[in-house]
Each structure stands twice: as structure tokens, then as C-alpha cells.
Image (cartoon, rainbow over all chains, first blue to last red; front, side, top):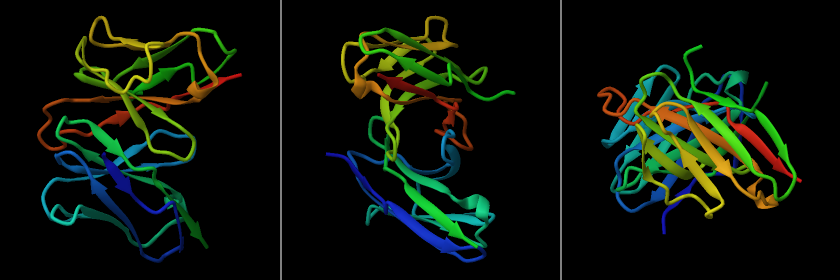
Amino acid sequence: GQNIDQPTEMTATEGAIVQINCTYQTSGFNGLFWYQQHAGEAPTFLSYNVLDGLEEKGRFSSFLSRSKGYSYLLLKELQMKDSASYLCAVLDSNYQLIWGAGTKLIIKP
Amino acid sequence: GAGVSQSPRYKVAKRGQDVALRCDPISGHVSLFWYQQALGQGPEFLTYFQNEAQLDKSGLPSDRFFAERPEGSVSTLKIQRTQQEDSAVYLCASSLAGELSKPYEQYFGPGTRLTVT
């Protein structure tokens, strides 16, 4: 079966750095997405990786290792507004998005 | 605004009632997706349209669920004879298929929270 694993919840301090990991086992791979979802709101796109390596975009970076079936989202200089769920999703061989359950990130002052 | 819109935002239905959920995608977006999201979970794929063609409906949980996009723009997800297990947030997303910079980025609507009592 297809499986996306990410921690259920993480806590970090304002101004710090946090890394959210995601491991996946899917039938085929056509890229990995990270989305941010605030409570009661729609997911919003953060990043897309299809090749191995690190993609940096401002305070957020996303890393992919296809051989290990592993990705992480790195958030720097954390702000209170970063408190949200972070969803990892893989595009499988049928170009269907398979979603993880999300990691709830709690930022403390 | 130019984003994806969904209506109603909230719907309470009695068990056995039929409901219809509407999605207005971003103008010009070819692809449209419906997802079901339970509390504390990621979205689960329901169905996918490319223009008016429903190319994948493998995620629809039962034949009580039906989706259409007759003119390749607005889409409706219909649930017949609702059951309590249908309670969830129903998300619609659209995508500009073939965009080179972000080939498969999906833009989500705010969702419809369905509660079946």
C-alpha cells in the first residue's frame, strides 16, 4: 500500500529553527509537495521537489532524497504565525496526490 | 478575489438527506480535484476532472457520491442519502495543468464542512 509518515505534532520556540520530516512509500514518484494549513483554512502551497537536494525559499527550505524516500521541511526564524499543520504529499505514478496526516507545529514565545 | 471558492462553507444535514457542494475554480484552470478531509488528517482524494472529463473517480467512497463539471468550469459534488461517516471537510482544488514553473501546484478552496446528524 501507499504510505506517508510524518510526526503528529512538534513544538518549537519563536525565533528558532525546526525540521519536519516526511518518509514515503508510494507506487511511483512524480514529486513531493509541502503544504501549510492553518486551522479551519485551506492548504496553501509551500514547495515542490522532484530532484534530490535542497530547495530554499526565504525562511522555508525543503529537502528530498528519492533513494531514501525521505523529505524534510526546514523553517527558520520561526514566527508565531507559523503555527499551523504542515502536510507532506507525494504525486504517485498515476499523478494522484497521496497525503500525509500532517504535522501540527506549535510555536511558543 | 481570484481564488477557488466553495459554497456553502458549512452544511448540516440530517442522515438520509441529499446534499450538493459547489466549487468555483480559478478561471482558466484545467484540472479540478475534490478531496475529503477528516479532522486531524490529510486530504483524501475523491475525484479528478480535466476540463469537463472526469478522468479519475477511484477515490469516491461509494455510489452515493457523484461529481460533475458539465462545462469544464464549476463543479458540484453530490452526496445522496448522507450518513454520519460522511461528516468531514470537502476541499476543492484547481490546477493550471501544464504550467512549467510549478507543474502540479494545486490551489485549494476554503472547503465545505459537512456535518451529518
